[in-house]
Length: 244
Ligand SMILES: Nc1ncnc2c1ncn2[C@@H]1O[C@H](COP(=O)(O)OP(=O)(O)OP(=O)(O)O)[C@@H](O)[C@H]1O
Ligand SMILES: [Mg+2]
Image (cartoon, rainbow, N blue to C red; front, top):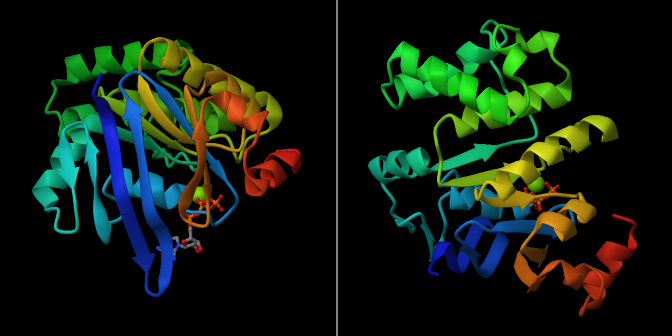
């Protein structure tokens, strides 16, 4: 099967800082790829480049048949964003809108769905994250874990072909982390293609079809979850050994 995401020798600099230095990897359709690595190794930058939030300086990225290169246009990025959802550590829900209204926004304004269609869809995706009963609640009435699940539902409502997650559980207590990871695991079982940056090693190992260890802007090791049990490089051994 051809990959849904392909990074080929991607480089990205911020000024004189070379954050990505020839990063290449593939994501197979329907698979889960977990990106791990130390702070500053370039994980978020790689994810942001895949969504066109950062322009790359060299190499190329193909995501859901969209080609990203140095000169990508705004129109190309708009088309890309219809296919790719991204969820961050901060949920950024609108506090003055209900959960349902938050989720309905993009389907109504970007996908031009009718209110009734958007409402049905919002109810469906809220069910997927186990929060069907929270449609009319306001974000402040929810726990952090529930708010993050709403943020995931909001992204799902755009019916993406690919979901990117950047440390979505980092701000949560262990108990709330578990419920968000469960939602992500269910999405994976449903066949959603996902790339996630995570510090949850057990999750990376258990749910990831592929684990990518980034170090100093490079893919340092890549393989299935077993690379975490048998690291080939001192860098990964040390990273895993830190109790992460
Ligand atoms: N917009 C930016 N401008 C300048 N430097 C940046 C920018 N974004 C990231 N960097 C730098 O690029 C490097 C990689 O950052 P990145 O956020 O990709 O790391 P990360 O692996 O996600 O780290 P963490 O685990 O802390 O989230 C860091 O040195 C960071 O300071
Ligand atoms: Mg990061």
